[in-house]
Image (cartoon, rainbow, N blue to C red):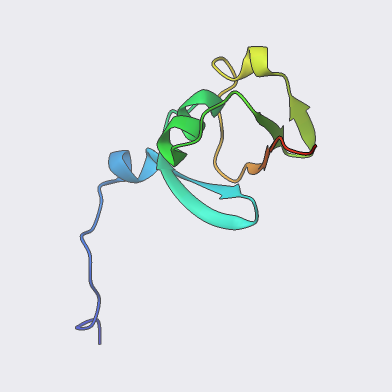
Length: 85
């Protein structure tokens, strides 16, 4: 019945360290604990020209290092792109 299952089973301790964060509408999985700065780093995004919204609230850049993410958080990342004439 379960012959087709792939992957390894995690212990309860290990399972508690993985959390689902919804990033720009996509379910992503990360090891806990994780700050917003850590999230940006793990996604390969420089924090300079982005705006972050966490659960419908704008996060100030000064708080990226201190705000910890929780399982189920919804994060929206907006990149600012310069240009024009």
